Image 1: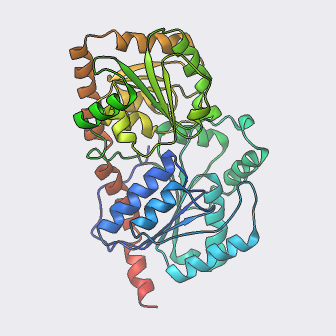
Image 2 (image 1 turned 135 degrees about the vertical axis):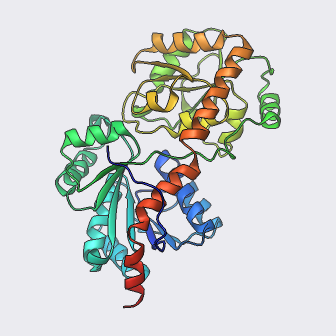
Image 3 (image 1 turned 180 degrees about the vertical axis):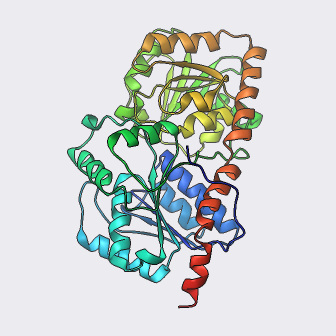
Length: 383
């Protein structure tokens, strides 16, 4: 499988990131991490969101990253928005347009074509999922994916965050010039064991330090299959668990489950926990939540979806999706381990993320990809 090499000494090009939204999510978090890393190195970047608002929009603005939105409503296309994107591309003169997710891939392709800069700007699409069950979503998603399949020969490369995602999209009919796999990266200084956060949150929740606590961090969405998780927890009387993410505050009342809703203190939540869970049924590429929990020293009980096996390795237990009994059994096995054994498995989990999936490694690989355009930037600055 094609992958990029080490960073080049070429001048770093201007990079414009185009994304569907800046709400919470794995793609959004990865974009923010890359944007902040680039800004810290003095690189010129701009972020464009198709839709307005979002927690990550506010995060970027506070950090001083240039960010704009096209004021599109979800599920509705507006030709004026594409003209605004084309104008932004002409003004910024990027060497690279990097898009994230289907709608943004399509918008970036059209906006770049309208800008008149296609010959001087490389276009990289971003594939962030694997086997999406489009029947669970609006019909428009199927249409957009179909258009992306037909136009997939246009970008200079498609960048997937998982091998599973690349395989699925090749089967769908994607035929790009290059199909790269660049893993997500985790900030292992932000996501790390934190005894003080553990003490503080457990005290706030009324959970003693010696009680095994499970954590799932994911929005409520068909892909995340909370029905499976709740069914698994109902098979484990006495188990304590927390669910954090948009919509979790409205989950069905389940004994032992603390429903937190959207939270911004995810590193502290993981630090307060003992096991990271994921009940995803489909669609996952590279699960940030699993890797973030592992970086905080947590072993894994999760469904084997997307690249989960490659992420988790021997740091936990993976089970088939749609199987609450198997998930309950995996959770019970980890929960019944002697504390020292579970802690040792957590050390394996953190070491795996530090060595293979760090933010520094991911940012370096994106830098290496974008550096191919560095000389284009020098030539353009002289015109």
